[in-house]
Image (cartoon, rainbow, N blue to C red; front, top):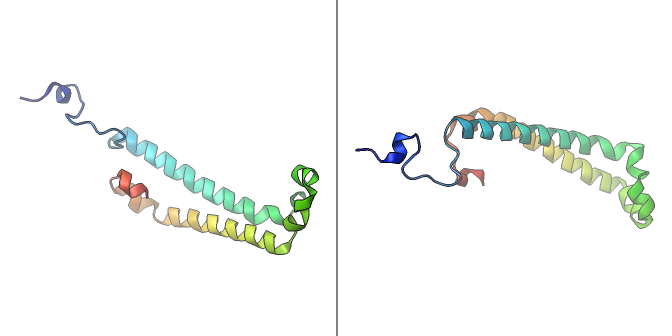
Length: 112
């Protein structure tokens, strides 16, 4: 005889945070898409912004003028550009592995 929980559609041993089922897969898919879009947008923003006029003329630099030489230094701008490239690479990696991860069962250990 089946336990009462299985009769009403719940498993006998529920695991907190278990992402199985259609709703968990849809949430996982949405989170994955949002993280890909975020990585690509942040990367593009970090590639573009350091070379614009607003980078050296903004409110924070008026409040803290001692940081202006650091912020307008081309090496610092290059470092920010490098972070943008890294974000874009992460986004592209996530896109390339999107389908293979989507077909696999998601577990808590696979998040790390």
